[in-house]
Length: 347
Image 1 (cartoon, rainbow, N blue to C red):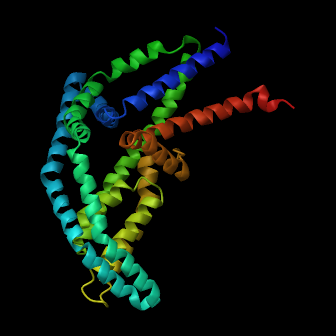
Image 2: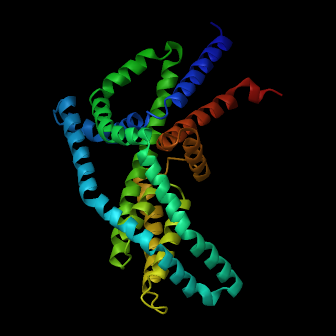
Image 3: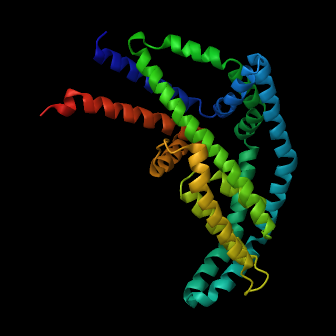
């Protein structure tokens, strides 16, 4: 088989794999989530294994801890979030009116009138539309199946992936083309380093940011501090955009919830909180947890998230960042091969 035939064969395999993913995207969520969870906690499992534990015992302990954390979150955090979401929906028209009133002295009357008409006239319809969409999603059997499978199948997939991680690794290595095995393993190693540095590090940054915002925003009197904190933490992995959206949202709610028009404590506190967060994230968290050697451009990250979500929905969002890191390694490898080839050097 010549090079052209090999390239054609690999192209057909990749296309078939992509079509298979597209056909099965509605049932992939628990499996993708389970594999990502297993990959994320594998270092902990490996460390326990080094303490003279069997792989089975280490995987069981880690799985139990993950399930316990999930149950604590469901029992404690979810009810609080539910109450804060309902409270925000109830107060949103009032807050919108207060916000318009407090900024009305700094904007032209025509602009205020148009904005007020646009927001207040449509906020009820927007909320009803959102609630109806949520109800429809939960009523549909596919959505309900996905939710139940995510809860019950994900831990099972994660456990077996953790337990048999080394077996899967050996089986994949045994299937690699012998002539290119060394190069492929080197690329896999670079991908693993990239994903380790970015994904695991960025998840830790998001968790720390979420806890920081939840605590500090609640302490300064923001009634939906936990909701805002989790929102800011969840979008913190989107460079610049995440911080900006979190800051603007928190600042608007702080202005709307001021006890008096001259009480600027909450807005000022929000500004200080977000400045401190940005300084710590840029100078401490990112260098320590993510590392300076992980080079993923912000535009590439945003594109990967949008592309993954468009192609595969929420599953695409989950795999977009690992895929972006892997593709980044492949692009750099392709560039190095091109620069050494006669195609680049020829005149």
